Image 1 (cartoon, helix red, strand yellow):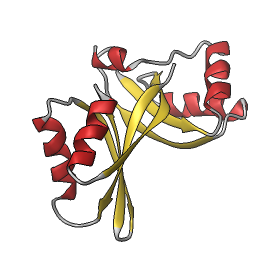
Image 2: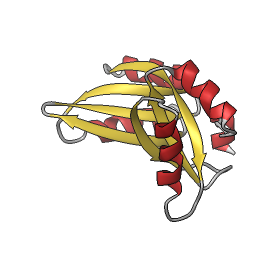
Image 3: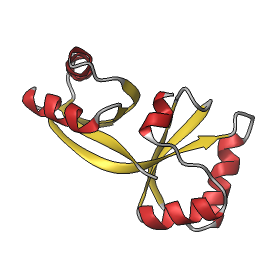
Image 4: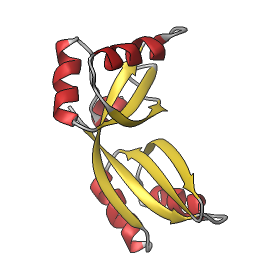
Length: 141
């Protein structure tokens, strides 16, 4: 299963991340995960929220550009080398991912959010190897 991730393009200046978070909070949107990538004058904020379509609507009404992309949330064993073990399996199976970042959820200790080049292949391969994937509801607990 996949979950929706909201990507937001913001100018790289003081207060922009706060404006994103405040807009979401004021709209009652629960922020589950956030990562920020800097590319000079602009930044790319990627978030997992409880209501992605509503988040996009709220952010666009605030004058920001936001899109939804499907990603996969995988629990990772909470031990030294847990992430390395997981990524070794992904690597051995030749599943090519574009980016990954950690998240937290109520139903699992450690979660990695991953964007794959071929999401369907990744889902099938992870399922074949008995890796669990989480829904947004499971992340909310």
